Length: 145
Image 1 (cartoon, one colour):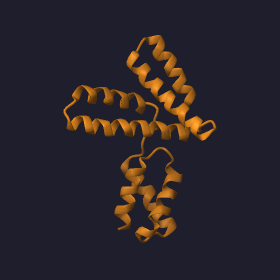
Image 2 (cartoon, rainbow, N blue to C red):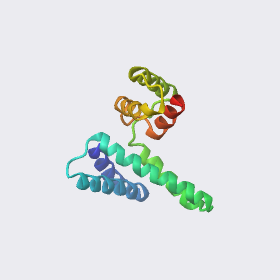
Image 3 (cartoon, rainbow, N blue to C red):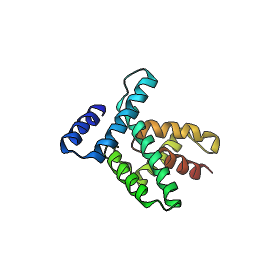
């Protein structure tokens, strides 16, 4: 995954696409910072987690800038999210996610909110980076309450 980021950085340089170049440089920097913090090379799932964190930051900034009617900033942030999203795996559909959550609830015999952590942990192991864990948490909470 990190190799793809580096290759895309070179491509953006060759294409003289300054905006995309800046976004990819920021992403590369964030991944390198995480590598330094963990003192080891990151796996693809860990790189994806960094990308998701960067997308989440931008989405919350979009909400804030929208409140204050700074539409030029919102447009730039949306473009950044679009570029970053190209590195994320395809997310599971809601139906597929519901099916996996139902299977895990049956597997662990979860009947109350006490087992929510166990259910989320097992769902996370099954879906990896292909699901938004905040969405998973919300669905599990609805099903167990």
